[in-house]
Image: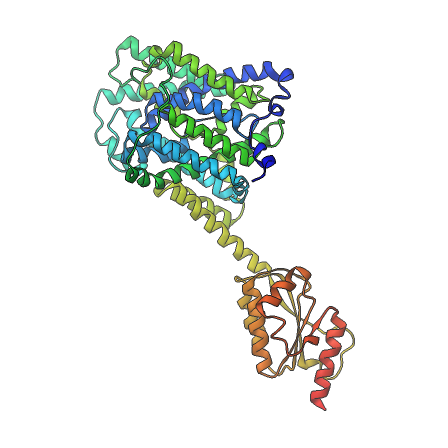
Length: 543
């Protein structure tokens, strides 16, 4: 890569050119989103199995690093629900000791994806796949909170739905009742604040009320527990080579999700703000460095957070300063208020995530997808089901395959082979000339129909194939034309080709379309000349 290309992936003074005009709004937005992010960072850390401390460290370290090095001016990064969904089963299988190495491996993978300029690949993911993926994640996040919300032990299954049912079977009073009461209080406060004061951080108020109630009544519910009064010292993970190789697969899944979610969040941020476009490749570089840094400090993999980014933009964020302030505010909470945070009930955090999961996808969006086309609705439903029942990465892959299948099917339907009347006044022998017009796309999904149609001809001496209106031709389509030409010529039927477009000519030459013609003069640019040549063939045959 050129020096100029590398420079484009690094921070510059241009990132802060608007700061003299926007610093007040950025400062307020950073404080606002920091308050909103505090309960979410704690909750996502606990839900992932890495611990509340890990969630806070990720929001602080990754939030600042991604803000400085990322490709979006307003993106807020940290622990997210989607990452929790992927990370929780990995932590259950590998243990928390593998977290740092997974962070480093995944961060390096995302960083390399940015350096290799793979950022724009996100544009190939269709909307129904994204929404189905989001719906599935929301359902899993909700199900993952069931054990904490009911004060029960997590189920043994790696499937969120099965594990939720297993945990409910171990429920016991009075712990179940008190835990559900705290969850209900959190849900009510958040919903009321959303209705009466949408910009007010209702989640923070909810956990404060739940914490005070639990402390005053001495409720038998689990708390976050003691947190260190500061950031841990950075350390490199130590692992055996064999163990490290065994983590490549999980790290790849984490990296794929981090890249997808971060780029989606950056794209959404660019669409709802007036701070300019985002650089997809630089965003991957920033997110990769953020996960690496978080792993060194005991955090978890980070991604861009759509909800927190939207809060920051609505609060007035215009530059990266807002995300940096968000991280510094959370650092101040760790340094000053760690003892207070340690007394927050886990059930309250579960309530916060349950409300968050329900708000991840709007009913209007679901109705829009289901009401668009049958193919899009199927892709949306399949992606959501696979996300919940199998795996997030498989869900994206299967969703892409399903979307690709329906797109090719629709493209094949739009393609056609039409027999036309010969231009000009009819002449004797015209009934032994067949003129076919190819239109749309002739690819592997549509080529067989043309082959069947043309090779079924009877009592024909000349076939003219018009290719001037063919928009797309692949190797399969070109090979079918070659096979069809060879087949017709063997039956004594002369094939004339008219109007091969310049972009298709090289492919036609390589595959053999031109060699299959009886004579090089059987390739025409003008239809009248091709028809005249066909009539001369018929006239000679009659003579």
